[in-house]
Image: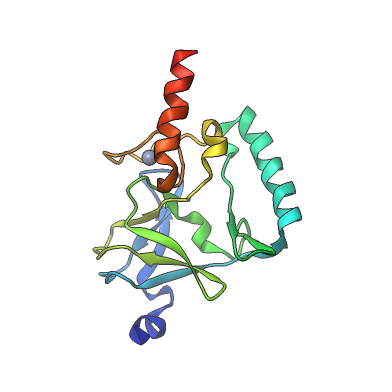
Length: 170
Ligand SMILES: [Zn+2]
């Protein structure tokens, strides 16, 4: 376990254009499962400020879904992290419904951690974990076999399926 802490740096990741969407992060070398690949950093903001920023983005997304990316992560009960800042390269990582990494809150820091062994050159993706509440604003074109068509936390996929079915009925 300690080994992973010492290894955490940019030694595993590089950023360039992605076949999925815009920029992406790619494995520079083999990344063992459980490796902390990169920390997701940003502005530490209150929940109130976070709500204000999220609403702003969602309103923009209603007009143009391409602008619907929310970069905010819950840090703890009081604060969130808004990663939409120049100095957070982790914001370039793309969402996938079947990501090879995941975002984890480790002692008040958000880390992108390898879910499985990632081979060199592979794009590093994770589930953004958006709440199902705004599913219609967050279209997904990740190309994974299991893609649910929207960027939604996996725990809420069942709920998403119900919402989609309900929409078809109407
Ligand atoms: Zn998808």
